[in-house]
Image (cartoon, rainbow, N blue to C red; front, side, top):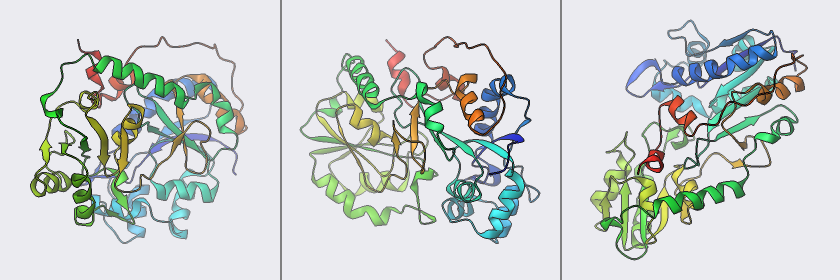
Length: 362
């Protein structure tokens, strides 16, 4: 591993908007992370901290990686590259840009993360945790830095704590008016996803509805009624259309996801690879993925691709001081302080509630 001489904040700089080739869909997330952690990094050390985004055109690293594969930057090309094993040429491009850096990232694509592992470029990769009904968002953190979990120990969120919050969430939800659409026995929910969700990528392609018709038929046959809850940003994706057009015991619903789950009649939450099926297990329901969910969140590891469940205060100096010390970066003394906890701080910062605003309404 090279000695660290700078910090690069990045993410999925390869990702393209589905509706607009040559335009990044992740620059906003990268810039969000950069501005959030930069003050703490500067309190800790004098290393330069810079951001790396898509950069556009053919002049940047993303353009070079696409060109190395004979592809133009577009959504379909991103899907093909997302999980592929990096070639020697690609690793040379990546090493040339990231050598000597600590990489702090928001949702690295697997091709880049794999290259970092092979090239021994240290990284801390951050994602939004799938459980989103707590007082604020949690994060998942994975890293290839040895002993990283030890210096993050005070930020770990344990599964038992999430279960207790699940009880608090249900206690709030059951006081809401009951929904007529949930009346019945053994009712299920199918939760839709956006059509550009990275967790829908498998073997360089997006999951196709035709492959899942037998599974959809099976799940509809196992329940008296299936409530089909589309993602707000993808009301008419192929899976939603297939369910509602092919199976008579489906009902299209727009009600809040958490409100639906507060009904005892709801037994199971199905999805292709949505975080909703993970949340369901913490809200006393059975959660089922119809395809393999590609990530693992836990309380005991952040290596090997596993995400450690951590609290939202990743913007504090004490979160990063231990990481820097592990890499041999000398850190300055800093005042140990806490930023006053405010419910929904990260939701408001990211400008998205994922339906959890229902807990704030009376």
